[in-house]
Length: 150
Image 1 (tube, rainbow, N blue to C red):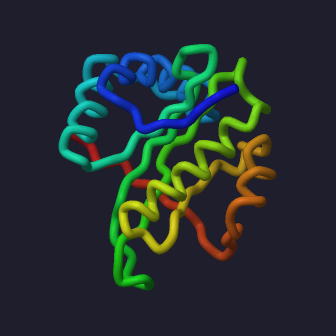
Image 2: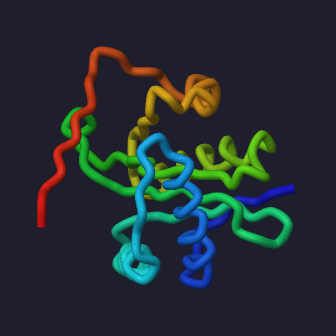
């Protein structure tokens, strides 16, 4: 049995470890400095610039969702972006991702959002059936990214 809750500062080391797994299993792997990630997450939580939900099973943090509130000109109000969602491999197919998504929707409502948005890579076929059940798949958009050098 798992539960979803709002993360505390004490959860951040476990979330940082999960971020390593998240990026290493990505089709676009990424390395990061643990201290910088810890400081980044701690600062976002302290300054209420983000929401961090965790999934707990077997008395350990096994999943997370990182959420940001931004503004939407269609709604003329806040919207929530589910920026990152991850469940440790050993805990997948147990409904934890669905619980995280549902908790993210509830978190959005609590923050005045009228809708929640997220994206996934086209290669993330395992998550797409769940996402198709929870949201409307948009087409006609192409996502671009531009790195800004230091």
